[in-house]
Image (cartoon, rainbow, N blue to C red; front, side, top):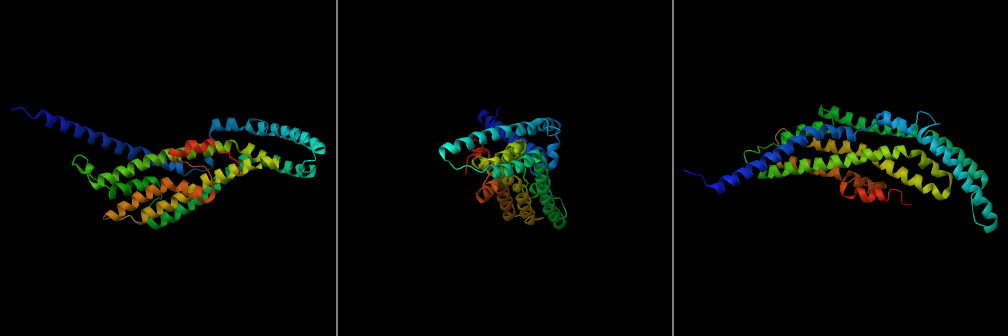
Length: 296
């Protein structure tokens, strides 16, 4: 007796969809969580990359610091011309004594810019680690994304082959998995932008020489600090997630985890609204990068 071909086709399609989605969930669980810890919890070691050191330069007479020091001469020429013209146009310009004072501060800042960035990265990492250590003492395990995976698999567990994929648990699992995927792209963008802002730090300090270019440094500092402070906010969100962890999972705990993942995605937006900075949301990150140094 021949089976209904339409039934066989529907069964094959359903099983294929279940297998594909199951593989996606497993790949996200096994790959992205450990990477997220490396992307989010960064410290001054990211500046120890050999290729990055070659770009920065091993001393002040090489690399980008040398370029920034060379540009100081250009600023002095620009000021000299502006100062001479001010005698004919009667325009307001800063006095030479003020320029010399600002110049000394800028030269020191430019030549120690990477050291300052390294210390900011270290201090930010230290504060984040202290918060995570408090949580570790309370909950008895590390406060990280890898530990979050273990709790998620206990709270939101289902059998794809059994048809649970199309249940409420399946929908929650899908939201969590694709939320983590979005989170990975967002924090990868943050990681890259921290490195970029660190590289251009000598030029940001250089802009302080003249009053009409100092807005570049303010924009750079605001963006850099907002990206760093995100690392301090993330442990608090993870602490809230583990706070509602329960050995007997219920719908309330599952919804809290969904809310926590969404809060992690929107954390940069909350910081940006509070102190300004650059959005690391993948959907709006490209448009924000274009205006990274808008004045104001």
